[in-house]
Image (tube, rainbow, N blue to C red):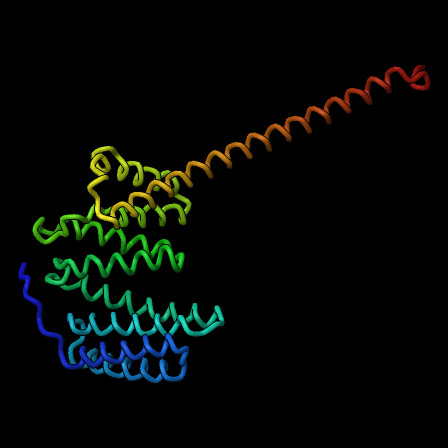
Length: 259
């Protein structure tokens, strides 16, 4: 796989410059200014989509457009408006990643792996769109494992990836699958040299361990509540039975009931 990078086109450079300005408007809470810049980006992305659809350039343009709208989404105070903007942004992110996944050359690049991961973790953790997020997280993991070893970051341990997978399974109500993923990732062979881990891997390890503990605690709490509920139901049934038997016994001892 070639390590040389193609020089970005003039249109991509223009989009990057406009995105930088959107980010500045975000800090200033300038909604009108940010909106105007986003529309300029959208126009250029449309031109690229028309002249070079489905290309690496098209995917990159969509990615920066996504980032611009996410920046714009952080300005409004209205939660509904923010959610609508994020939804629009991630639609562009999905389109960008799908273009990269459809291209055999792009699928073999580390950048595609991380674009799929970043999209997935945002969908899972930020948006709680677990099914979609899980799809892209699993793709990211599969593509990473297919990369030549020399193309992989030497210090990347997949803790964050497997955390995302497990988090999605929890959101989908599949805690057993989540535990299986986490226990495999936290096996001694993966953590025995943790003292030599980079900071981001230690953070990923901690997140996996914390999520596994949270699942375990929830299951214990749920089991305890189920036992308490069953015990209360049993006690209620026994009390009802005892009351019925008491009434029958009292009726049997009542002289007015004798012939």
